[in-house]
Image (tube, rainbow, N blue to C red; front, side, top):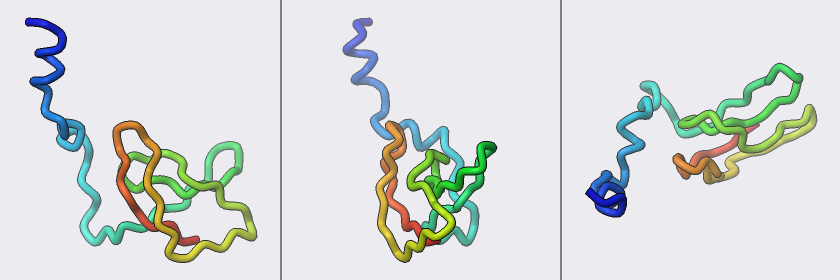
Length: 80
């Protein structure tokens, strides 16, 4: 089988079968996490990739954001 045939046979949206579904009651809003270096980031609720750095005086309300993760690309809301 040629490599091009293998690639074409792969289901386009197969990645979603490997991801956990959001928990019950999930409202599409990003969580703000504090990392080991002390920095705070709003992270994608689906893949966990850092989205926006949150400084102590940062105020964000209802900001739509599309994840930059190569396998994610989901849209969510940032509030902090």
